[in-house]
Length: 240
Image (tube, rainbow, N blue to C red; front, side):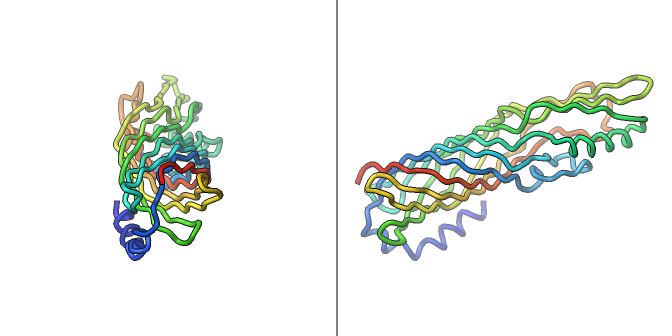
């Protein structure tokens, strides 16, 4: 959460100019990419919080209302993000780790589902003019992050017992936060183009496992989520 105060401090010198330029509210639709960060994006068998997440789709519905047309407003966003599934090379790495961790001859892995989540957040927005058509928005949002799914994993240990281990898809709902910048360029009086970059973080999703009698091998029970989301879209202005 250190990013938001830095963004706001950098934007304060523009505040005086913004007072004379009314800011209309807007609603907008954006599409872009979600880049997995931190443990979420790591591919490390020995890190139980590594997510093996990939770069994927980010789709967002945004909006904001500026009080009295000033620089301060209330913004909201509902967004869908997809950070992919486990690839063949991921399964090869994880399978080799289970084979070694359990001391068996071979491990057979199957995976389904993918990282899909919905975020719903609100928070303050600050809009500053950079010219007659260009404006800079700095915002910080908080809310919920709901996991529609995470990758499943079925591990069959090839030994005398033919043990079958299962990691289930998570449908957790957790606290989330986001901070970032948006550039608004006016195409017409009521329509603009918006380019965004936002850092998103969330509490860890809970991951359930089946048929585990010990902690040998990789055992994932928590999956932290963090990503950098970029998008481009249209904003439709209302009000002044």
